Image 1 (tube, one colour):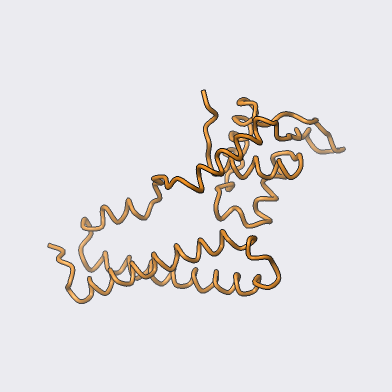
Image 2 (image 1 turned 90 degrees about the horizontal axis):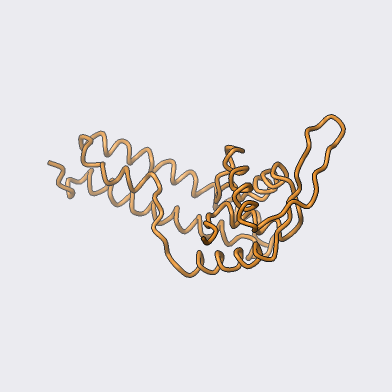
Amino acid sequence: MQPRRSPLALVLLGLLMEAPAHPYELQRTIRRRGKDRVVNVGQRAGLYQTVNRLHRDGLIAVRETVRETARPERTVYEVTPAGREAFTRWLREMLAEPREEYPEFPAAVSCLPMLPAEDALRQLERRRARLSERLARLQEEIAAATGRLPRRALLEEEHRRALLAAELMWVASLTEDLRAGRLAWD
């Protein structure tokens, strides 16, 4: 059976291709690099489950177990040749093949007509304001990093900016249609 890919597994393999590390160090690196905006490492249990799965599937191996004085033992992992192959295959597939993903917002949009029109408009206006704030903050971050970092280091932020801008434009259009009565609700 083929090992199951996931965004977190891809990022973990990529980091382990750079250098062996223990799971806590991987989580810290993900956060330090801002990759926690693209993979969920909020719950350490999910990260450990993914590390265990990669190990079980032979994509990573234990390099060593270390103990620092008063700390618990830490298992340091390294990527295997099979892990390098899986990383490259998954990366190519994820880049080339659009895949259905199931975020919350489209599910909420599918149920939007179940709210009264005024409430739907109010909630969408709140989202519009939050999207606008996020987009402005992200644009500031990108502007601050431009020139300091090579563009390739900003690609995921550029992608996030494009998605935020598109969603903001759609939500703005929808709220205008609701406000103007161009969208029949009853």
